[in-house]
Length: 258
Image (cartoon, rainbow, N blue to C red; front, side, top):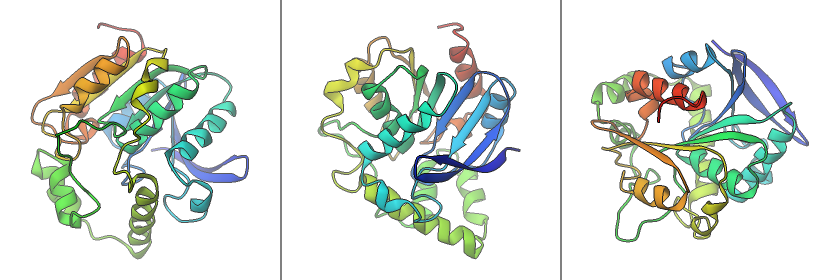
């Protein structure tokens, strides 16, 4: 299990989940907040130092007013990267993938590689996306997964009062970042050519939040990006297809088979 500390970057401190040793991997989480520390993270930590920060404004509203939009969040993480001794492998999921791309188009000098897992950030005209802001809590869980056993397990949990407060704070902050326009930045696409590090894109073919057709647009926009999709998989491949995704990511981080 990870160690949990408060990590200070300029005037913002966040919870940082950390485990393992070796070349650092920075994981940026999605709109639901810090994910459970499951098999994917345990396997990464067996080979790398894994750094999983809670975005400012998530978990509580302590620093929410300082991060007004995705551009602010990207700039915060550029400051975060400057506090580390060397470059990192950056992995981002959904909202965190969008943030990772916004970081990379601004400055790749602190990155060794970029892995995006079902990232938000782009818009494909004529392709409808899901809307987790209007879905009920049960619909959110049902629509995140292809295998409904994962949804059943999530829905069976009874949240503590503290956990319910965190869910509310996360929802508020996600809306601040992605409400309008919904889940994309109209200007991001034209700057994706600036991503100059090895890039990997992972998507579930049955993603109901951000359809897998979006993978084609990312692949066209980022030079040399490797794309891997998984059948019978929803929006969280590193949970639903943990073994396969972990193997792929570890090979990619080590410059393994293409």
